[in-house]
Image (cartoon, rainbow, N blue to C red; front, side, top):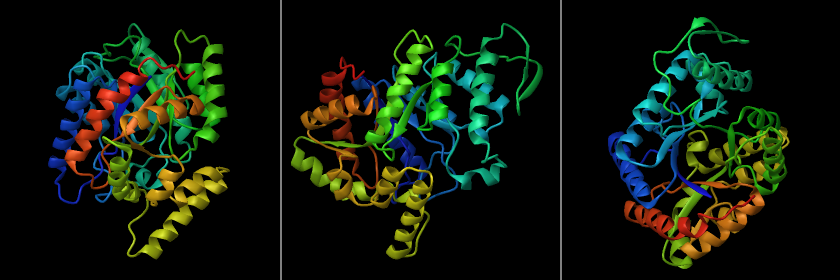
Length: 362
């Protein structure tokens, strides 16, 4: 298995943005010393009460400067919000700056509110994502200038000043549970992953098929399938669960619009849940309805809190059933104290990673 530090880079009540980023670099330095494989951040916009990370390529450069071996990247860059030429240039330059350590996570985007200020095309976002993957591969693979004639990306006699270190292109990921997009990933050699909003039971058949499709497409290696959730590790189960219970319920408060009281917040939750039901995802709807209930999240095994032994055991079981071989752990959430945060990361790196490093879930 592989292991990544995952960060929404949540805003903190008693920190400036600069202080929050400094804390992030302390986390990544520790992860680097402990043998974590990757670090990833989101791309979120316009919510000072939520994430403070609108620029994943800047994150990757800064994370690379702070570390030596860990492979930083986006998870993911919201492709329809970027000019494709600018993004393909930035990816190449960042990979050069990192000496070939960049991981390229791409997403279509799910938050409609992000698209307006960028004049982004929300309705055709998946098609734009797929087109960009093909454009990136063509741009990096071409020996010189080339033509690209896609539905929205059209370039004549186009060439890059700088290409990435990793050839033919840096490894790509698309975080998706969409069956059609997963089929695209299998054809195009793109790794995949999912967030705990999508239950492991619902994910199992889709990612079992994805792994089989990758094999049928002739992949020379196993695909990487990532699973992302909150994790807190402490010396004992009792201590871990006591600390985590204080913060798990507030971890994803920012996923809902600002509310003046508990009743309005609950209405927002139910509206989001209904959207998932209309999409035919009842398990995701149930998770969203209970997203701010720490006890419910823990009782339903959607978040990880325990001793190194318990976290190791659960991750092994989850990975095998949920068909994932890369774990994206979100260690820093809500108002978790830094001393607890760093102890959690240290125990995970010293105890959990070595115990699961050679485990092959599929």
